[in-house]
Length: 226
Image (cartoon, rainbow, N blue to C red; front, side, top):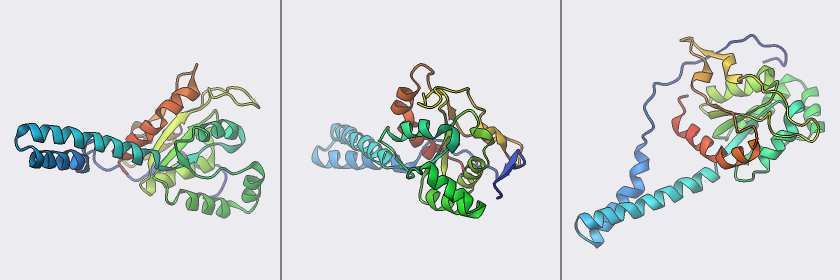
């Protein structure tokens, strides 16, 4: 892809059929607990107690796994890098390493292929792509490329509006368009009908994101359809 204007809507392969939110592995800990409880205390009481204990371990296992989820941040560098840095500072998420402005400019000077390779390598082992949406993010060619690649490679995807995060350079900004509206499937459905783009509370945007981002990411991974 060349780093210039790209025709929209961008075509994507159709999503997989919805299979619901149930995953058999969710029963692993409760089942194991119930079996152990029945062994130690035969009867329905042992099964119930063991199942409850297993459920506690299941929740702990999910929370621990959620904190380790590696993600890729997609955003408009020039406008929103300072806002994005605040999201990075939440600290509970393992994101791709930040790039300083000089390095980003040097990378772009090497041409489109160099930028594309950098994106591909940094996204390679990430499980979720988080698009941080500022005022102009939806029109940025490299953000569009990142969304397209994320869908093609089966990554979970979410969007989060960050225009109400205060930037030392420019304060808050106007709300940008949903970047997922730029993508359509062969059946005519928009990507935005499947991918959530969260709009945090305008009076406490940072706190809202900090409190919910892990849950949003975890839900996206469990319910993705690509």
